[in-house]
Image 1 (cartoon, helix red, strand yellow):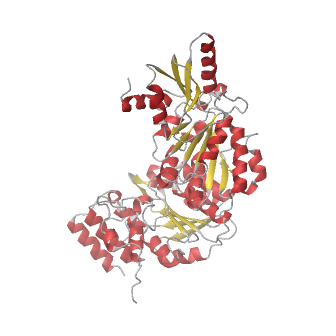
Image 2 (cartoon, helix red, strand yellow):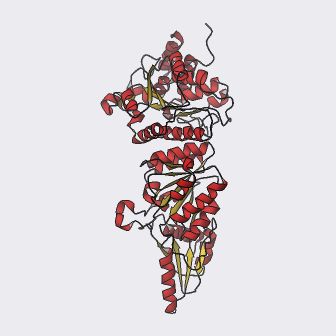
Image 3 (tube, one colour):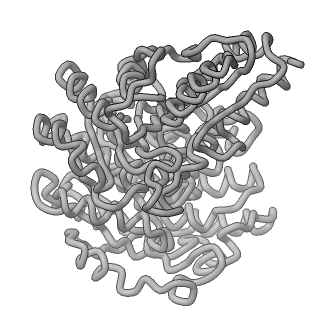
Length: 263
Length: 267
């Protein structure tokens, strides 16, 4: 997804000179295509995520669309208050790309495991939160959101090869995508782990258990209607995500059940 | 000599009037920067129009002293008396910290250590847009406790943001004590110099000196600039000067009258 991010961003930057890319000294072998094509619009700000967000706030006030890049924990948690008091409070078009949601930096250890980034970002008013499931959906999500007037958090995976059969690069703000249909079990998922859910659904289908699988990439605005509609047909919804239950898609689904009074 | 409509004295009067009317504190912090604000709004900031994209930007990073800025906006004619009189009232945009929704405020602040980063971004934006506009950021000395401020200091020096001018309100005080007792920042000028900034010590209560120092800066090339403004917390009201309690304390009726008398008696 991070490769798709850079490739798509280069295309967009060719069309729109407002686009800038800032990194907190991360993105080796990922960001070079942008840095080489637009050396004057690329800034490695050093290992200083708070300043990166503050810079982006100042740049956005003047009309730029700054994209920020770091590992998901460092992109979201370290500068969290700067995000709150900067792009969110001012409603500026800053885009924060956090790479490696969930356990994707597994061997790197707990400091690199982004298990609450979506949750903390969901708390902030006026912030669009996107968690694509594969690189094709990441591209579609970027094309759909790069020009939004307000801020965006983009949770990216590292995998640029796997595509989820049935997803076909679909993305729409405020909507969820059905990738499998079946009456026996409902699974709702978010992010790169969706491929495991699709694989499990196919394995269950081989045993005669037919699953419906829904992918939530537009975490905010949340696909409330799609979730309510699909859950109305099931007694049980299983959520799968590389995130704490609190704040993630598990919470989101619980909120929809509670708010809609689903049984 | 006729008093300028935007004088330090006028700013101080408004600080006292509004603090008393609203019965709120942060008086000493606002008095500390009254002369810096007078210099900026009377002599320095190029603001042909509040919506002009090429206007100079000003960020009050020590947001809690914003009453001095409201006073300047009022004296410039950009804020009505009616609005000024809503300071700290229900539903107002004129709170204890600046809100960008208020015309004349470019950036919301209030959390210390944030303004210089936004200012560096604004200065970088001006350079990318080939604009000659400048960015001024007023920080407190205690704000330099924040590590994030030094991230911005490093960035601005590395990128030679000569159109960025920081002003440190060096009054030696913070919320609970004197800075040398809480977390020493001495020597302040040497610290900024070591990070590659062009450093100028200045009397922070001398409007002429502040104005002339800023006028002498090369904002087209070279390093970013910082004025180390030596100030007295609570300046102009003798019983507030260098007193920790006036960071938070509101005035009684008699304290207000005495403060106003002192401001009016100051030459």
